Amino acid sequence: MKTSVPEAPRRASIEVYMEDNLGFLRKTPTSCVDLIYIDPPFNTGRRQLRSRFHTENGRKIAEDSYGYDDSYEDFTGFLEPRMEEAFRVLKPHGSLFFHIDFREVHYCKIMLDRIFGRDSFINEIIWAYDYGARSKKRWSPKHDNILWYAKDPGNYTFNYDLMDRIPYMAPGLAGPEKAARGKTPTDVWWHTVVSPGGREKTGYATQKPRGVVDRIVKIHSNPGDTLLDFFAGSGTLGESASSLRRNSILVDCNPGAIAVMKRRFAGMDVEWHGCDGVEPAPFRGGRKCPGA
Ligand SMILES: C[S@@+](CC[C@H](N)C(=O)[O-])C[C@H]1O[C@@H](n2cnc3c(N)ncnc32)[C@H](O)[C@@H]1O
Image 1 (spheres, rainbow, N blue to C red):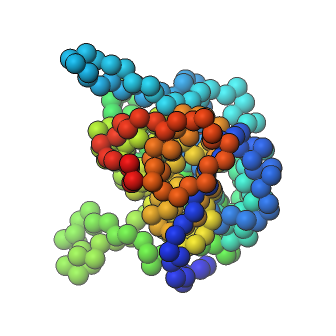
Image 2: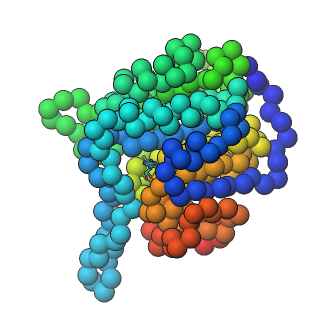
């Protein structure tokens, strides 16, 4: 297991491709990527949209929503050839982080076990949050599942020493020194969702929080590494990678995703491929993007 971290390069590159990810992956050379984080559609059976409104001259105006279709007759049939390619393009020490939820996680686990081998399954991370309406008919589902596969279960990047520390639940039992230092996180990660009115918000449906993605990037890759997200959406992996000095390759077939990334990465040095004619999305979060 690697624990030493090389010197950080001064700049990180971001490449964005607008195309179907299967064609993209088939063109990608073998063993060229250190870390893959993907957050595919969850097969919720509905179109993912986030409606937003703003007020102009006292009138409520609906804004464009940047969403995508999320309904598949054969979900694992859609994913399987993509995951076979993902395995191929990973470097021998590389890892896959596969973000999904309760609806499809069990089927995806079986599919990924077949492709990576059961020994390569290292963790199921539960991202637990506490936001939104609660059901009166069942336990409210408030978590996502992130499956971690290492291409080689005997040799993968895990920067244990760089882990953030979290507070003890019962600091009195830990003693003052330990309580002050905090403890390392487990496979259950409590982290809030992207706040609807917060600085991180891009307006893209299903945007994932930087806190969750940053932890994966920091612990499972090193500065200068190449990271891939071929279901990129609003580009959360790219923003995280860039701020942590990793290179990233982002792929999405939805012009709405490209529009949001063009806004999010405004002023940053990005190579855009096949993205001509897509205008940056209008500013909609609580935060000005760098360079905007
Ligand atoms: C759950 S979203 C990703 C959200 C992202 N993690 C973020 O933080 O914004 C899934 C994305 O996959 C994209 N997508 C779905 N099918 C695709 C395909 N065949 N090729 C490329 N992108 C695809 C959708 O357009 C959508 O943006």
